[in-house]
Amino acid sequence: MIGTFSKHIQRHTKLYLGFGLLTLVLLVGLGQDFLHSVLKDYNFQATESLLYNSFWVLFLPLSIFQLKGLKAFQTGSRFKNLTVMIGSIIVVSAIHFLLFPLIVNLVSTLFFSHVYTFNRVLFYGLSEHLYVGLAIYSLVAVFHYSRKTATPAVSEIAESPTYAKTISVSLANETSVLNVSEIQSIEAASPYVKLITSKGNFLHTETLKSMSEKLDPSIFVRVHKSTIINMNGVSSYKSRLNGDYDIRLSNGASTRMSRNYSQAFKALLNTHQVSLKN
Image: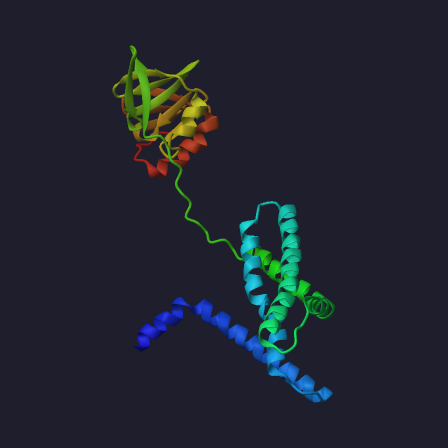
């Protein structure tokens, strides 16, 4: 029984907090009016006090309405957000000061012996509480945007880039799907690139730059302005004593590595099984 009640409370926490806040506002308003009647020596009317304190009760639902509106119309532009913020303050304040006399007039018409006219209550609300209404709704808007700015965004798990697993190649009017793991090296052959694979060589209608962007950089590395190699196919490399290197691949082929690309090549050696001869 207690556990069920506890779960019910947890599911409706915001609802109970809202009712609690409304009750507190009404009690504070009643208490203030009672003290004012004592100080000014006039009869305290609880029903009239409750009716006029509906002005403060309206702040809760209208603030929620304002927050939802700000969230719905929020953009990446600061100017547009500022415009929306100012607009929300004006619109919600206008609704508040029109709704308040409407409620008072309607309730007094139905249940009171005397009626409070709409114009009289509207003038009372504007003359007594206009600055309060504008200030509170301004604070709600500032709170909304400051919360968005100050609250650090939850760091999202960065998605790993998706690199090509296969490449479509054509040979004698026949298109085949080639696994990129079969590519041992790629050489420039303008206006094509030549894919050197365990199944043979293929001309492919791409540039060396676009191929380097498509393939996994932890496996395929550029070693020359006209050559990309598969690090998994490297057997060894040897210095030419002038800053350049000769790389031997597992298929027996040898390719030249320019000194300008040697740093990226060497950085990958720790993650690949390569026999070193330099």
